[in-house]
Amino acid sequence: MGDMKAKVGNDNTDKGHIMGKHGVGNCNENDELLKDFCLFNDLVVGGTVFPHKTIHKTTWTSLDGHTENQIDHITINRQFRRSLLDVRVKRGADVATDHHLLVATMKIKLRSFHDTSDRPHHKFNVLFLREHRKQKARNNGQPLDRITRDLEDCLHTRSEEKTENSTKKG
Image (cartoon, rainbow, N blue to C red):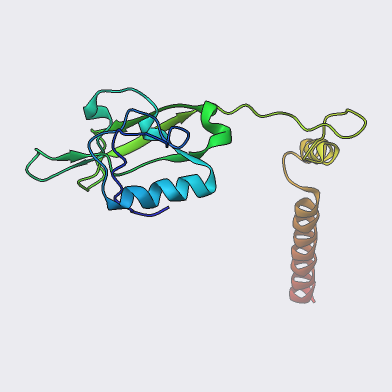
């Protein structure tokens, strides 16, 4: 999404569907841009939803170590908000920057697709894969065309050796 450096703060008045109430600090001018973007695209700011200690929410620390802000965010579509289990900062990651690593934990449930006859839909040609496996087993793990090519090379080499031997004898 980009580096907007938006401090969303902890005031979610009239923005409860976009962000939670567990932000850090006060808002800045980029806050309104991020909130408008989230409102327009139906997104939720994930880092403000979960209650954590401040040290696990701040993603940037100044060089003097006194100023900390929550300026990096993970946004997710509101439809998938319930699949977001946790968002927190991992401070020990060596990422060669003054920002800390922001990690989201998600749980996704996938449904199988059924066609009109209520049979499960296979995305792979399973019969082809089974036949290919049988063919490889019959040919000691090598595809048939490779064995054929090796045999032709071997026969061609043998016929060249025979012609060289016959010309030497005669």
